[in-house]
Image (tube, rainbow, N blue to C red):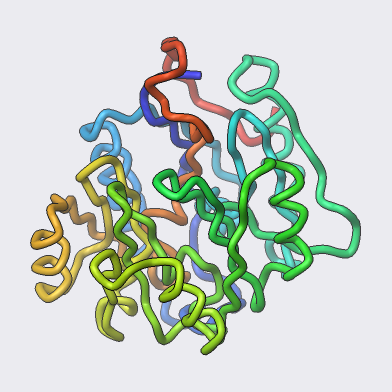
Length: 300
């Protein structure tokens, strides 16, 4: 695997808001201007990732699958092992064979090593509900609106890593990545209002106060918790000044991208990416390789 951070993104050519499966989505509010802005926003996010040192490969668009632009939901990936998602809503289930074909091609290239299937009867929506915390060496696992609680044990068994289950309390924050973001150095940005009292108690028991950065209602609604973190760099949707101050005071540098069209569908920078190079051991202990630039066609 490449020593650089390695992300998948999706061409936004077929992105729109044409159905409603979360409270953010309003098909009546979608316009052609949003489609043009989405293309610009996706390109700006890719540029920000590459400027931060990442390698990005792009999945081709598929008409009728607008949420293909959110590959974070496609799988959990660690140590080259891939656990593909099973989506709860029929509107997204058509993405499953598309992403499986992409992962098979990545396996053929030696960029992932194994695909493992979820047991029947369980839903799990990928890295959106299983977020790897490299500092604590564990998965934070959301469940409730989209992912089954029973999938948490499957993640622990599949990857051989500790998991911490967190129940989400609202349909508005339907994936863990909309409200919880581990940051390099052990800090965690999170929105308390998204969690059940039991989950909130778990977070506060696991993470000491000096490492907790709490997002306000405004900051969470701006989808800034749905961020990509690379070292001291946090790449996110446009942030309220209050959050800029909090993150800068904690030692992080921000790159803000206009992702408003994607927020209309309930996603932002983390949702729009799937990281493939995460390892359960420090990257410095692994040999470095290089990757050619490639476009991964969604259908071949």
